[in-house]
Length: 601
Image (cartoon, rainbow, N blue to C red; front, side):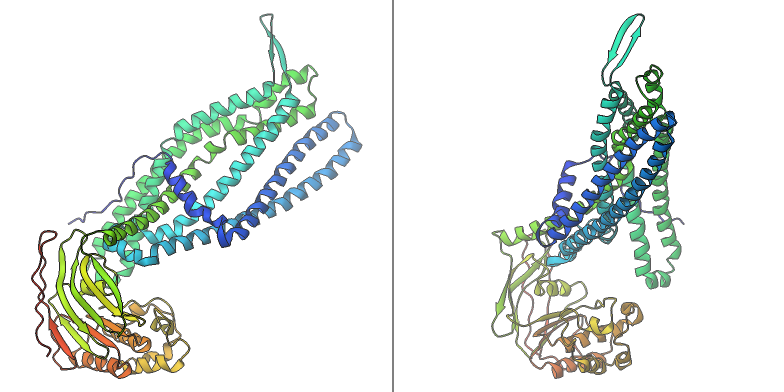
C-alpha cells in the first residue's frame, strides 16, 4: 500500500512584483528610523565610506598599471623601483579598506536582521495573531521558517546586492571616463572611405556588455520562478520533519513510520526535482558566461592594438584601457551576474510579506466584527472581581452558533463546574471568556483589576528552566524561592523541586497527568482572581482531581474557579454545577434554544 505524498503548491512563474518590493521596504525601512536610526545610519554611512575608498584604491591601481608598463617599455629602472614601493602602499590600503567593508557589511546584516526579526515576531505574536491565524486557517505555511530563515536571506542578500549595485554604478562612472579620455577617437578607413568613431572604447564596452547581458537575461528569465518554487518546497519539507519530531510518540505508537517516510520522501523528491530544474538553468547560463567571460580582458586589447601600432597609445595606456574595460563590464553585467541572488532575495521577501499581509488581514477581520452593527461579543470589566455571562452566544466566523445563549455568574471564592459532552463547545466558551474569540453576541464581564488564567487540557510548558516555566505568563513569585517549591509539593510533584533550575523539554519529560499537575501549580503561584480549567485535570483520577481543586481553594480562597468538564464531578467540591445542553444549528444566524441551567447542586 502506498501513501499519497503531499506536494507543496507550485507558485506561478513570477516577475518582480512592485507591491512586494514596496511592502518589504516599508517593513524593513523602519530600521533607519526611530530608536534604531542612529545605529543604522552610523553603520550604513561607514559602509558607504569604505566602499568609496575601495573605488578610489581600484582607480589608483588602474593608474599604477599605466605608470608601471610605460616605465617597463622605457626600461626605466628607477621609476620601476618607485612603482613597486607605491604598489605596496596601494595593496596595504586595499587590505585595510577590505577589513572595514567586511566588518561594516556584516554588522549591518546582523543588526538589520535582528531588527526585522523582532518586528515579525511582534506582528505574529502581538494581539494573539498567531492564534487567530491558525484558528481561521489563514496562516501562511511555515511561519517559523519565514521568521528564522527568510529574514536572514532577505536582509543579508539585499545588503550584498546593494553593495554590488553601488560599486557597479560608481565603478561604471569612474572607468567610463578613463575609456573616454584615454581611448579617444578611432580614425580608420574602409574601402578608401575615412571613418571616425569618437569614444570608440566606450561604445565597444557598451556594445559588448549589452549583448552579453541581454543573452543572459533571456536565457535566465525562468530562473526567478524556479527559485521561488524551490524555496516553497524547502519550507514544506522542513515543516514535515518538524511535525514528525513533535509527534514522535504518536507516530511510533500508531506504527506510522513508513507512512511518514513516504510523505517526507515525496516532499523531498519534489524539492530535488525543483533543485535540478535550477541546476539545468544554471547550466544554460554557463554557456554564455564561459563564452563571454574569457573574452572580457582580451577584447579591449584587440581593439586597442591598431592605435598602439600607430603610436597613438603607449603600452601603459593599453593596459590601463584593458583594466577599465573589465571594470565597466563588471558594472554592466552586475544584474545578470546577480540574477540568481536577486531571485533568492525576492523569494524570501515575498514569503515575509505574505506573513505580514496575513497578520494585517486578521486584524481587519476582527475589527470588522467589532464594527459590525450586528450583535457581537462585548467584553467589560466588573468592579467586584466576579465573572458574569449575559445572553452569551459563541458563533463561528460564518455565523453558525457554537454555544448559547448562556446566563450565569461566578463570584469570588465560588467554584462552578460546567459539564457538556465532547465537542459540546466547552473550549469555545473558554476562548470567548479569555478574549480569544470575537464572533458571537452577549456580554462577558470579568474582574477589573485582577488576573485571568486559563489552564487547557495539555498545558504549554516552554523549553526553559522549570522555575521560569512555572511563572509563565506573568513571572509571579520569581523572587520567592519557597513559592515554587511549595506549589510543586502541594500538587504532588515534590520530585521536581531539585530540578527547578534545569532546562529540558518538560512537555516530553513529563506525563500528561504530571503536566496537568504542573498547570495547577502555576495557578497556585499566580493566584489569579479567575481561573478557567478546560478539562485541566482529565488525566487524573477522581481523588486526584478533587485534591487539586481543594489546593486552589486553600491557597487562593478568593479565586473564582470555572471547571469545564465532560462529566459532572463525583464529589461535592464544587459550589455549583451547570449542565449545558448546547445546540449547533446548521445555518448561519439560526437561533438555538437556551442552555438548560438546573438548580445549583
